[in-house]
View 1 (cartoon, rainbow, N blue to C red):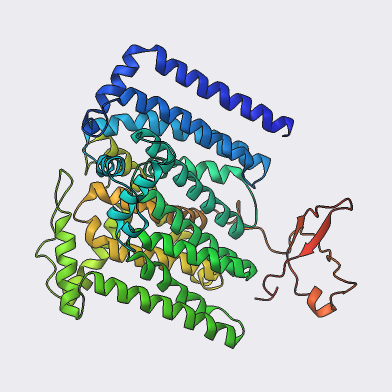
View 2: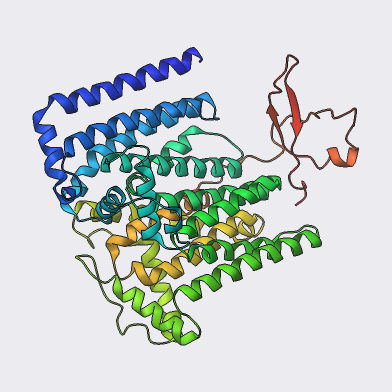
Length: 485
């Protein structure tokens, strides 16, 4: 293990040890932990033991970061973020748990009192699947609600890192500050740390986004596999995420140039996956006609109009026409509400400030962006269509419950945030690196083969990698798009 890695590990150990000592030696803190856990005391009698075991599990997960196949700089950033995640999960979140009754308590209760079985999994059934995963978690750290929560926080952090790697692929530049901005955005930091459906769906959408950007840049088969896994994970919890994520891929078929037969193959694969996922969705919700779609939408939407932040759609949803008329209002709500003053609790006020920032970036992006810029970059149009489709569907639910709207938006928030920041940037001060700017052009020899001049003229990107031998470092071509695209 390298000296730098050992130094980071030592610092990490010291922080964890100090936190555990503080938690153990401060009776008032332990009493606060006990009081905040009163809402799940029916499932856990030894709340203090439960809490301390979570610290040990957090250290084990943090220690594993040192062995992840990422760079040293990224390991350091991940460990820093993990310490912040622990503070949020085992500290700040206690306020949240002490004031609200959560589904997470039932996940833990059923997970600790019932046996795990593979046949209990059901594709697209979120609650049974999360409950069964909680049962499976008992084999790692038995009978600990807080440890289960720590595992969810780690899944959320992995998702943020995958989103960050997707942004780096698009931006053509690796800047760890992007990771910190994305990971420390309050809603992402908090909602990706809770115990529930959100972190697993979050990592699914992250894999999907990473795969789309990677495939667009490098056309490697592994990105298709990552994308398929991401769509499967997201729809494993919420069945309707498969059509939401698959539909925007049509953008690449419409505007992107390329070989016709490849476009046909891609279209066939995506169409089959979309139709299959839609058939599962229609079967699950008994949708056989347009009127069934209207009635199910109204039933599901009105079911969320409860609680202090609940509200009702005026007149309800009675026809396809009323659905279409409501979509602009619902989409705006899903993306930019609650606004400041709409929810007067700490979480609502923070969400309002965040949405005000997003709305400001949205207005700035409209002012600074020209249609030609979007048309020339398929990934921008894909991101816009993805956000629009998601907002159109989730608007029917988010409008009914503004409190839940902040949590629902987690899945799409990194894409939305990255898109708005990119389009709202000052082009004179911050421009995307060109594919030919300061990029070395060397060729990795392969059995004496040499590239043709026509090939060299089209190669516009190269990346360095290390060959595990006693020889030297090589440079490998990575062909992207034509210069005159």
